[in-house]
Length: 335
Ligand code: ZN
Picture 1 (cartoon, helix red, strand yellow):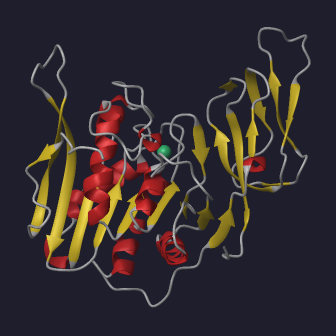
Picture 2: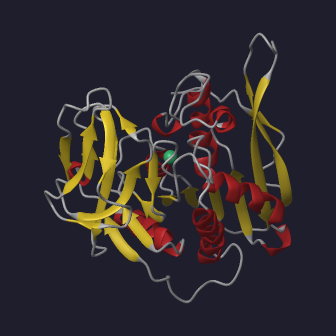
């Protein structure tokens, strides 16, 4: 049995009103012997009702969620809320401040660190607090991602089919559709360690999504997340008019490893397909070029499966095994 968290906070999760404060995580370093990492957290509560938990900055170089949640914290009016909203806009704060996927302190990817460890590294301690304190409070968990520095995505909301009940799966699918993105992607079973997998183990419906990438801020992605927050709150009955039906969306899935294309050799990747393109099995995806040896023939790369390109490598250069493309296929919504 894991022990108590070392993270402390002045925030009272049961108090009505808007509180903008911090989770304090002791971190003793040369610059600050008795210092703390102060991770921003906002809690907005008004009376009884469900709890929505919104998180961004799980990966520090994915910005659309960080932008939208940062603005949402200042804009939200407690009087319009019925229930509670937890907002963790830069969950892996050291990574968010460094603009990196993994934490510069312990080199850990927070989205592989769940359920965390109260005695572990900095990233593991943050994950443990989320898992042991915030997930048990939540009726919905929304974790806003993008492709980070290395990948570009067309924007979509989605959910995973982690170890969970049929009822929970249905709730997660509905939540993903309720976001209101043009694509809703079932991204299948995830490995343990991912935040939304951990939320499912607490019985919490979970929604995620990818809203841009390339270490940049997608304007369309920010708008989608901003509207998606409001749509989810309305769907939950926490804020705004509950819509009579779920919005229109294109349902897609990513069934298995054949949906990925990986670099077969280190080199400069010349892509042959753009985001949103429809491709056939065996179609050329691009080629690896060797800038230090133009006499060498390029190595062709092919799509193994057919589908729609939802993700493409952002960087020109790739090492063997780097992801170049990710495809999704149309899905009938049945599990
Ligand atoms: Zn991410």
